[in-house]
Length: 366
Ligand SMILES: O=C(O)CCC(=O)C(=O)O
Ligand SMILES: [Fe+2]
Image 1 (tube, protein in one colour):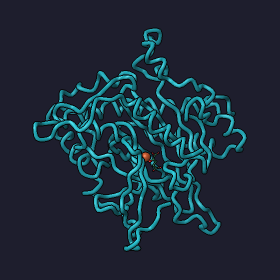
Image 2 (tube, rainbow, N blue to C red; image 1 turned 135 degrees about the horizontal axis):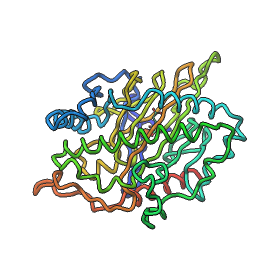
Image 3 (cartoon, rainbow, N blue to C red; image 1 turned 90 degrees about the vertical axis):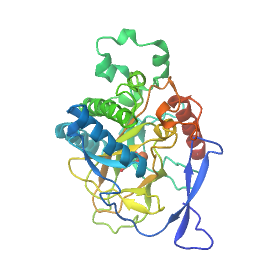
Image 4 (cartoon, protein in one colour; image 1 turned 45 degrees about the horizontal axis):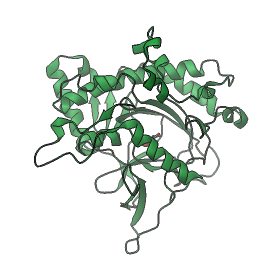
């Protein structure tokens, strides 16, 4: 991927994509093998208090804020997403990724329409300097018809919201898995509800009214990606050390990540060293996205991460990316600016920034 810096072999140049011109930056990163994160670096936060009184909620909010301001990553437990919903997706993901290639390719992303659907191994490249990602994935996006908030009112969906929804219904073509769509959308609904609650806690943590962001989460970004990273099984680990998903930051507000057993996810800490965020049973990993970093004037951190799969066993992960309404212009929130710390960013819609970045990614793939 990256060229080694000239003077120090323990440092390598890591290229990253950004929203802003020129579109790339690089960081000088340690080549030392990753260690596991400490509980201080990526704490486990108990969300049970989300349903408590305002004192409980404020206490929870301050813990979340602290993690979001430091590593930008935290685990959550007691998150309320039923194990059965997770197991349902896990089972369907296992069946899906073991289908013959021609079946998976029948629901593949058509770049002329959207980037949703199946993406085979080696088809995505985050930055021109990087190798292609080796992961396989399937992803779909927010649709009001899946959102319990709009059940029974689908006729009232505003036209500009409709226009924003990609017309890629082919991603749900029949692939011979009768429960695939049902299980994925049921899990998606759980994540959507959880993300809407978490954003309220974030608002409290930012000293804003708890319902401050509600207005921009009525037709939010809500992408679910199921990822598959095959293990090497009984064969020699020929791919050991290779990156399966290249270093990136997530684009929107926050990501809820479930990971199956086995290390894979690595996070770049403030000392520019990779650390593992190993799976912890019963938890999700949450991380802050670029758009929320921008809305908080860089107070909350959107942290670089990547995946290396170096185990014998297959690894799965499910990433739910939550964003604000795509057509809503959002500026830096009032509690993150002051006379001595003016807003660094102009108001923008999440939709326009993401479209710009995805177009750039597509360009580096062609
Ligand atoms: O598979 C993982 O652990 C991380 C996936 C990820 O970072 C992503 O899909 O953006
Ligand atoms: Fe990510």
